[in-house]
Structures are given as structure tokens and as C-alpha cells.
Length: 550
Image (tube, rainbow, N blue to C red):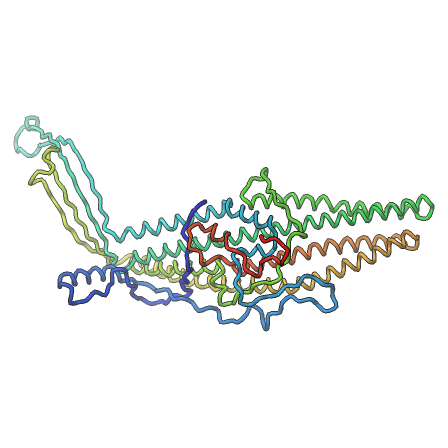
């Protein structure tokens, strides 16, 4: 099982940047007692602090939570039953309740739990997200290396044939001997670029923010995967329900066809009535192949989500009878939503990265200081390489600064500032969409409760009507048009009821996804799968007495 570091407390990075030049305090800035330091030591510490602590560019400021009390105007009403309507399972919104990390356990389906566990353990998309985190982490560590002196060494052995032509004036060039010798050189080079303006510190800050983006991308991939598995399982259950109900209606229509055939043989029904019933039966049977095709395709989708090839189909099968509608739905406070949604947190990290790039652009416009030293030995043979008199060294200090570059660096800074403005706008848009997603899910569940009551009432009424028509048909007291209408009405009603029941389950899953899925923020283990998948279900999700725990 792959390992990766996780953020333990998910610190907020802020959503607004204070656009001013400021100093960021580096790790070398201390609080030593003045009286305990020698003058030389104090001066050295001061120089080091100045070279490491100055950071140009904007500092990131944590954002304020959205100043709203709810997701919908007015008081949030739970999807309660309508008086006088058929009784259907009720749902209740629990405002302020945190979403469980294993939110799918609320559907009380062991096959669903097993399939999600397989999908999380074998999904290539999650493995890709983990690799992206490692790439970002190593890039950030590589950038930190520029704070340290860069040391390199080389050793070179040369055999040189040198012409002395021109060293002896007036002599025959052919008579001037050439010089041939060996040269052995050992050299050590040390270079250091003090981060006076904090350009490298801002670059590290940018790469750390990129790493956090990848962490939140992993959360988003995890939430998307689990939500897709739940949605696909519900859709399979819906298709199986539609196929079952369609077959049941086909059985009723065959029974009515048998009645008409007996009446036709007895001279009590016309041939046209028999043919009309056969046509109705054939039309109902035509509905099965498309449904069976959709079911087969849905099985392929579930297999792919589980990280398996289509030839290795998953063993889990789903039907509506074994998926329970969650009764209590946790609704996080709006102030907590921006902490739970991985897309919002990713947008914040994107802003942090954009903010740091402004400091990088500003530092590029300022003087750059360089210190270097190299030393070594040079001798005519290896035995003399470290003999006295063969050593050499060079000490150098330099500064470079842009004087005129056609406003290139200035425009790069302005582009970085515009990038921060863009990231801020993208963050606000992400927050707005997040609240919209929750509001849409709440409204959908409120409407689903009424739709479910209407669907159940329509099915019950259509079944009662069909039973009466069947009795009248047996007695020869009804025309074929009424029979056909009753059959079609009942077929439509039962399929609609199944679809409505599945829609209610899907919209419940969509609410969990809109709220951020309850990523376990208290995880302290790098094996994040065990943490995310091993959290026990809350008391609200515990099974009623007499049912086995999941």
C-alpha cells in the first residue's frame, strides 16, 4: 500500500494577499541575550539574518469565512411528508453535524462498502495523485537546496604539447624545441548566493503551495471516486429495479392476453382486441433489451471504477431493496464548508502560489549578490600534487543588477500581480459554486420527498385501476381501449417509482459530495487509506437493534 504524508490539521493559507512589500522572518532570526555574545559574533549573526530574512512581495492573509448563516433563504426545512399523502421514508437535516469520513456507510449496503474499499485501494487515479504529490514535494526540497553553499570538486590530468614558436626571435622555427609536459589539477569550488531579498524563500513558498494543491487534488480525486462508485451502484440498482418491474408488468399483460384469447375462442372478443393486446405486450417487451444493455454497461463502469479490467468483473451486485435511504443527513455550517471542500482548499493553495510568485518577480529586479571561492593544487605529476608550493586559491565577491532590460522584469512583475488577481477571482467563483452545489442538493432532496409520495400514489392508483380493469375484462364488461390505457399507465407508474426512489438515493449521495465528503482531518498516519477507510461510523449510522453492524 502506497504511503504519503498527509496534512494533520489542514491549516488555512488564506484567500487574500496584502499587496505591499514586507519582510518574512526566516529561521535564523533569534532572541539571544546581547550580553553573552562577542562583538564579532553579533555582527556575523546580524549579517546572516539580513541575508536570509528579507522577503519582498505580498504576505498571505487568512480569509474570513463567508458571513452567511445558511445555504438557502430562510429556515432550512427537512424533507417531511405531506399530510394525506402515502407514507414514504422520511429524511431529517441535522444542521451543524459533521460529515463522516465513511459517509457511504449511511446507505447500509455491505457490497457498497466492499466495492469502495477495493476502488480506493486499486484506483489508478488515486495512485497518479499520490505520485503528483511526491513530484511537488521533491521539487520543493530541491529549491530549498539553494539556501546552502554549492560545493563541487574536480580533478583533471592533462598531457600538453606546447609550441615555443615566437619565443626565440630570429631563430629558425624548426630549430626551436617544443615543450611537452603533464599537468595534474585538483580543485574545489564553493559558491553561495545569499537570499538577500527572499526571492528563493518566495520560490520555496510557491512550491510548498503547489504541494498543497496536489494534496487537495488527492482529496478531490478520492471524493470523486467514492461518489462515482456510489452513484454507479445506485444506477445499477435502479436498472435492476426497472427490469424487475417491467418483467412483472409483462407478466400481467400476458395474463390479460390469455383472457382475450379465451374470449376470442368463445366468440366474446374481436380479433382486433387480441391483436391490440399482443401489440401492447410486444411494446413492453421492447423495453427490456435497452435496459439490459444499460445494466451491462453499468457493470463495466463499476468494474473500471474498482481499478479492474472489464474481463475481471466485480462480484458485487446492487438492488434497491438492499440500499437504505439515510434518515439523518448532516449539514455542515457554511463557515466550515470552505474547510471541507477540496476544490476550495485547492483554489486557496493556488492563490498562495500566485502570491509567492510576485515576490519572486520583485526579487529578480533587485541586485543579486554572489560569493565564490575555489582552491586546489596544480603539479606536473601526481606525486607532487599536494607538495608545498603547488596550491592556489581564488576568492571573489560580485553583484549584478539589471539596469535596462526594455521593462521585461517590470512587466513580469505586473503579470504575476495579475495572476494573483486571477487566482482571487477563481477562488471566489469556487466558493460560490460550492455553496450552489449544497443549495441544489438541499432543494433536490426537498423536492424528491414530494416526488416520491406522488410516485407511490400514482403506482398504487394505477395498480388499483388495472386490477379493476382485469376483473371487468374477465366479465366481458370493458373495452380494449380501457385495458390498454390501464396497462400503459401502470407500466409508466412503476418505472417512475423506481426511478424516483433511485433519484432520492443519488441526490443524497450528491449532498454528501457537495459538503466535501468528510475527509478525516485528524489523520496522523501516512497510510492515509487506512485512516480514511478505517474511521468507525458515527452513532447516527449505527444499525437499529436486530441488524448486523457493517
